[in-house]
Length: 255
Image 1: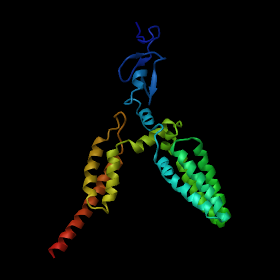
Image 2: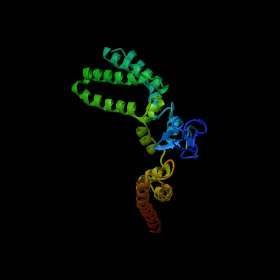
Image 3: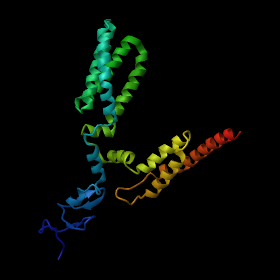
Image 4: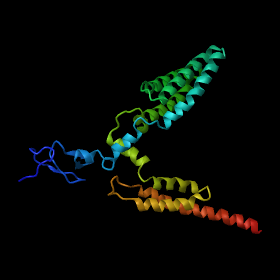
């Protein structure tokens, strides 16, 4: 007798859940990263770690949100000052500063239309600069456009605004923010340790720990082996820098 699905006794099983082993019919079979699971296991954070990552940052303000939100009161203040200054050439800048501040405040609150507002304000600022300073405004406009593009396309910003993000893109963001954070921290410390005494030894320790954690077969996979190795190498160099500074200080004291 062929196996059947426990939830659908009349349906033949097409496989077993990769986690709990339950027989599954086609209706219950759920694919996560190439493996089949029952619906209950597929919903677990340790199985679909990318979905857990999405939930963690869904609607959560990112660094751009905080940057625009903190800068909003200053833009509004400077806008009012520009409007009250009198000259007609200051009114356009004052109005745009006010609009930028208001847009930034609502961006901080996660209002979707502010994404469009960033684009429109960038165009408006470029037009004002073109009128006041001429062709040099092109460079300013290009830089502003690049910054706005970065804001609107960053995965964390999209998650903040509750926009759909494809799994491959989500995977890259997870790898950047959540995969083997010890190795990532070690690399940052090792770079700083080249000029800041004391960081080198700590980078070596964390680099070794991060390297020991690497496991491509884990769920989720733990990577960043190159980061950990680079941290150890640079950390050792940083230890040399620290030793040289300490020996130099002792030499001055003894002399």
